[in-house]
Amino acid sequence: MMQNLILVADDEEGVRQALRDVLEDSGYKVELAANGTQALEKIKELDPRAVLLDIRMPDLDGMRVLEIVRETGAKIPIILITAYGSTETTIKAMKLGAFDYITKPFNLDELLAAVKKAVNMQELVSRITSIQDNLDEVKLNEGVMIGQSPKMQAIYKAIGRIVDRNITVLIRGESGTGKELVARAIHYNSLRREQPFVKINCASIPENLLESELFGHEKGSFTGAVARKPGKFELAHRGTIFLDEIGEISLATQAKLLRVLQEKEFERIGGNETIKVDVRIVAATNKNLEQSIQEGTFREDLFFRLNVLEIWMPPLRERKEDLPPLVDYLIKSSNREFGKNITGISREAMEIINQYDWPGNIRELKNICERAVLMSAGPVIMPEDIPFSIISRLKEKQWPADLSGMSFKEIMSDVERQIILKALNENNWNRSAAAQALKMNRSTLYAKMKELGIIM
Image (cartoon, rainbow, N blue to C red; front, side):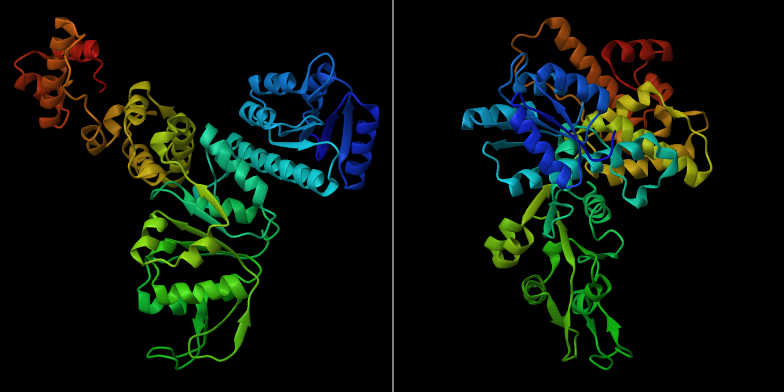
């Protein structure tokens, strides 16, 4: 991919030249295409950072070009341009995967802002893809985000759009979904990347100490304050502070946090000096803050200040297509940690992982993969390397409430499956013990399990 190369595709020569002049004056390299066919050829040949694509062109129109590019799986940001803007056209363009949509005549500031966002997003996706292609060279705690599912692509796109904008971000989602990874991705891809990234878990610090941790204290300000101590906000000056579990802080601390957001200043506990800070705030929570506002435990004005941009991290059960690359990454990471050389995971073991709902999300998956790598006696992870707790908690097929439409054979198969699963669970999935309890030999049990689709 050529650095900062923008492809401009428009059938009007005057528009092409004008866009080239504006973009080159802003430091971009520019290639031109006069129609849809040329645009497709140059996208394939040059792999530009972003594409400005006119909708109405001879040969292939912009919508069709966008559709073809997306069918190939290419993630290049495409900004559609037209003199014929309409709500219907905009909706169609966004559904096809357009990055943005602008109309003629152009507002140059809006045009350049859209191009910059597109380039930022593409650079972020390129970094993530490069990391995924070189997994042996990275560690999980460095902030690696794994996954190419549509939900993760939407998150990468959101990060790419705001990394260089000094706005507050609220990351929401269940525990273990990777909210801190998003915060780190925002920081390390922003203009603040060379400055500190400071994390504080608001739920892990007693309330009587949290204010001191955030804002610092002066010597003698309370029992045990034997020296001046700078708070996390001071330590994060010119960088980013990540306030994890923001929903757990008291109303008193919320009021002081609101002042920092509004005025960019505070005083240490026991001090009179007003300290100015330049810091980006990224907060995270797994709580329903709207409900907390209704209950009177969270300030509405603070919520609005924090929630300038909201990013929702999906639970792992909603992006199971990301499980294979996540497992691959975690196996390699665990190999380095434990000095093992596990080469992969068996189909049967992967099927168990796919069937499980992962209530603990990535954090739980990481723990399970570490344990499996540590316990595995062979070159690949097998079903027996996965903890019994996972297998026993798999959602079992429930007896159907409505038998209509089921054949007698289907009903009996369901009965057999429930009986075998019960025997396996009661015997810690020891097949020999389960076969003995069912008064059948092991080979018959194996055959029946295979027939009924029971994974071991």
